[in-house]
Length: 233
Image (cartoon, rainbow, N blue to C red; front, side, top):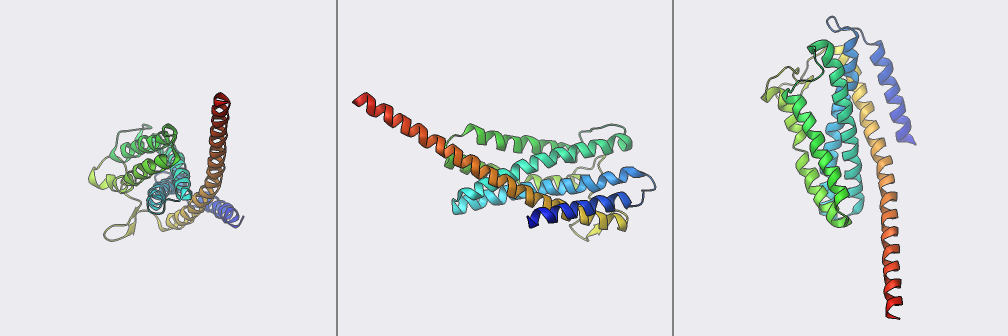
């Protein structure tokens, strides 16, 4: 309840601040897309990092709850990667003249959907829960390499995409008007709360799905044992 309230309040605050932010001299109101696009990208990084972390914790602890959290985090990451791509396309059309180019940043972002789509697909192809969790954990850990590669793509392979809005390596700096930095900070905090809230809700649903799966498995085993006993009788 408290986490949900914090998520709602921070999201509402981010929306109000985003709408009240001054227009950019060159982009006008298009600059407001930044307050969704950048936090969405941050949330996808956070979610993919969470997938790897929870997968690692599963391999160490062998507790199924970590596997459920890894699954939930991967699904959230895929969802907000799509949001990031859509927001970027809406921003690209009026500024670049096209919705999509095979720029390094955009290409690696699209590839993340392949990687984590494969992660989710693998989970549907393996019936044994323990083996499914182990394989998924390894894929999730390896998949986290996407985060630094995508972040540095604009530095390693220069293309049409702008460099990082917030530079973290070397001398830290924010390449935008200071007022936008404060709005972005609130939006990033709001999206972080949103990630934590969605993670909690999805993990609960995953636990229920897992319990149902185990019940169905036990019922099948009992049915098979009964049929075997009747055949012997």
